[in-house]
Image (cartoon, rainbow, N blue to C red):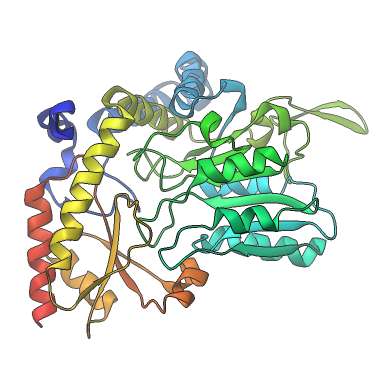
Length: 397
């Protein structure tokens, strides 16, 4: 049975108003929202306008709390292990900067690590006198698990990995890395920003202690909201770098007590409409099924890659035998930024990926600025054919 027969594609198309105005192949940037996700936010904003923001939040308390249950179902954790935050970077940073680093500690990461994470490693390295070390990958971009095992000693404080990098369809082996981290009782942090919503995520299988994600990418939610999972067994060992009256209680003149759940990484003021929108997009994805979503994304992405490979002058940036919905490439003798502008002018949404966003991988593979496309289950072959035709014309010059 094909992925299309497992998903009610006609319903999905109808549920996606943005399909009427563009071909959207920038899902790793920000996906098109389903109508129900859009409406959940509009409805709450209208309620705020009608009765006031505090009153609207009180009235919708049960629905707002249900968002934590939705996240818990998505990644297989307990609702008390979930914090809803302004974006994935905030969630990741609130937990990473809570780690009690000591001089001499080691941070292990991967070659295709994202810039926002890596600069945080460098900052901590300077401030705390710790080292940042990269787990080598082979020529296919696959992390060497054997080398990782050899790198482990009692000074490794954290292994921090981006599941799917921003500049290619590579999928890092987070479960295999998790087994190594758990065996040696090493804190394990996973950035799932590009994987949440396009493939199943199970924190018990990954065995991570922290996992961060955003709503706006493959989950098809609004901008400005995300979540971070923190395993219950490590919460008490992580003191947030910033606290307020939600994350802590002021109990005496000189004393405060942190919350015991993951909401110690939240702050009091947040966008409730976006929060409800994230809950709605997660529920929508769960209804379709993450296995079904992954199967359709994989089929469409492979179709796109196959067609691009057939174009003279197009060079794909693919690492590893397992690829996902992100397809990046360059066109010989064509500036990627100019090419993207031409593509946008023809009603197809794609973006660029700069070498600075994944500097280690870009340097190793001598990458230029790449054209970054990314498919989702609401895309179809006709849209991909249109995109490929545009690329063929640009490549011909």
